[in-house]
Image (cartoon, rainbow, N blue to C red):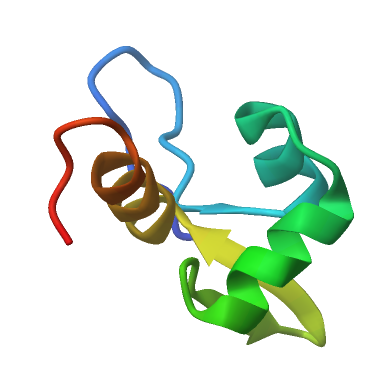
Length: 71
């Protein structure tokens, strides 16, 4: 059985996203996401040779890159 984390609504909470999913969420192209990864602004995991960006990393990037964010 796969490891799943129920969130109370019967749906499974996503912990990782692919580069195309992140690019769609941020409304940028895939190449821009790879640039953010190269600059260290997003962190990824190489699961089975495919980059996966954690929800936590994406949330942190959004929080620190919006008006009023840290850094």
